[in-house]
Length: 205
Length: 205
Image (cartoon, each protein chain N blue to C red):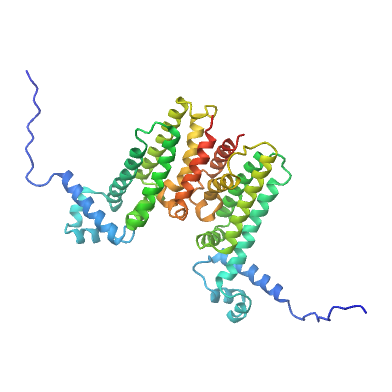
């Protein structure tokens, strides 16, 4: 006998998922206009025409909404980096592109969406999970490129992989972390090129 | 006929130089207790028993006093670095010590003299001349060690010296700049060791 999925009636109103997305979209617009730090859930509720209690049904706190906004924002940056390195055969070139796109997306966010940048900087300063995930993704990508480059014979193999990967991560971190990037904007583009070259010199076989 | 220096009478009161030093010493104590940002020259004058007008005879502004305080503080850090590398034959070892002492002195300032650290961070954020001089000293020391290491055959010579020196400076900068160090304190000590190793790998002949 075929097992069939139990019948689930379509709810008449929007699903919880839809409401969450709706709140996040409205909150993104609200916070990117009025800032995150100085506004409250009450301000947000009033502006988007929901009751505060209704918003709290879906999110425990303002930060819980901020978390999703930051996660969405960092996801876009992560996707841009992943896309930039995808299918590039040379591991060295992948490092260069990774660093370049990290700086480009971070700088773009800073100059074109300052309020959203500020939420991301708050998140970085307070070490929100979304930021830690973003950092972890970058660290993983570095280790991945490094391993590939070693297998391809592009990079030296004497240094323990973890040590080399972590040191490269530390070089990129001031440009990766939105809290730090704002102090490194002046010369971020040329810095990323020069630091990529230094990293690659350190990896020479 | 012998030319004689004109007779200059010894002033009865303290010299201008003494008064300046006296004001700076008192201001250092005052600002490191009550903070720099939120206090005024009036507060300072009241606390040290001078008139505001008298202080303004010697310093144009609060920042002019702050400049001297920061310059003194950064001079101590610079001296510590210079001392740590003096007489060390290996250029590689000099890089390691330089990075180590930069982190040590900065971290010490942060934890043991937070208010003074905050003045230095303000100075770094606003790019006061004292900070630019501190950065320039570090950049010069890097170029100097690099040149020595090349002459000694410790380091590669293919990369243009300016390019290699600047990239090394960029690696150290997040730990050198008081404004940035505060975000890198957690793992500053191990970071300096790992980054020194990466720098030295990049310099391998």
